[in-house]
Image (cartoon, rainbow, N blue to C red; front, top):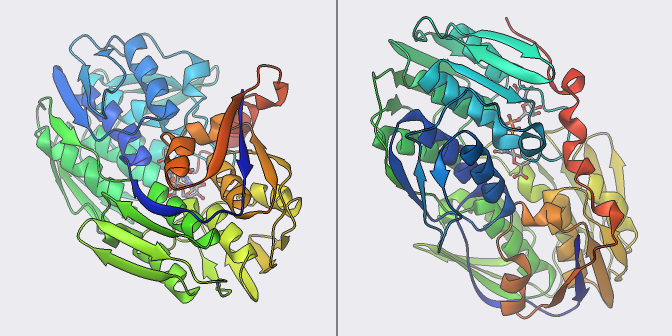
Length: 447
Ligand code: EPZ
């Protein structure tokens, strides 16, 4: 149970090296289950979601260890789908749903508990299950677990139209379809950069996936796949978080080791807010104005403004001059952080899926609590930009997705200290698993 104590109102300045993309890593790791043998993954972020995934893989019989300098070997030769991973591990992370596609693809069978992850809306997995069914798998639920099965016959390529351009469903169906017989066409797929990353990892294992990054993906099934060496792409949400933190502290931050194009929607909005943005090759520099201008935005699937960067952005806009409107277009309930921010002096009104933000000149430090990953990052940024001391508790949520967060901020000039507090009973993982009740999470909208 940890908290961060921040003495704010100090500009963040300098260079920060961005790690590998969390949401890509948590898909590539289960993808290794599709072939027997030893894979080498690199540019993995040092975050707790990766440790959790490793534990799950070990439970399934794979041999793996914690990444060292971002590099990790995963030997999947002895992996088996027969021992379903313990519910408490599966519920800790959302991406445990990728075990369904990967194990179904290789073994024709998977039994996995309903996924957890941040509590930011209903988050059904009906589109994933619709895809598995269309490929010929039997899908059922049993004691809070999802069972997908096609043991007696190979999955069959087919045509699938997603009702929503879901990142998780797109990747999960790809994982299941790579070893199917014939061609699978998935339409209305998500186009996030990590979908391209996962497809290129699969292709390096011998799969034949084309069209990743567009709204239609074609998968020509292959008989078998081989282990691979794959480097994860940089994390544009981590990059966006430091860019916004720099802007919110009147700082000057250069994000190293990124793909600037992946950050376009964020840097465009920062530019509109008066932040000076320079980019070149694999870096982006953001130089804050004395005070940002209000801007309005709506989060959308890629290439729109990313929902994962929205909570940090509301902090910057809370300090802007004028009124901003921020609409959440992906999840139903992603303004958890607003209530905590109010305690620091923001003036934000949430109306349905829109936050109306009246900028204030100053935020004031106080004690606040992270309720999920990006909400936690937003509160840390608020603390960095606020006068006085801010204590952000339940920082475990943030450790799920940001590597060495406090150390990287310290290197940029932040006055931030991590304190381990064994008595903090509020730091339970309950918030991250609220959405896990199977009756709520799953809605079988199959056609
Ligand atoms: C992934 O969540 C990410 N998580 C999220 O990261 C990210 O916010 C989100 O994609 C959008 O980019 C992982 O990659 C592990 P979706 P996912 O399926 O897959 C609805 C972070 O902070 N939907 O694209 O759950 C759903 O309810 C986070 O790093 C269905 O209706 O997102 C939502 O409204 C949190 N049925 C929308 O689609 C389905 O079967 C998009 O969800 C699936 C989704």
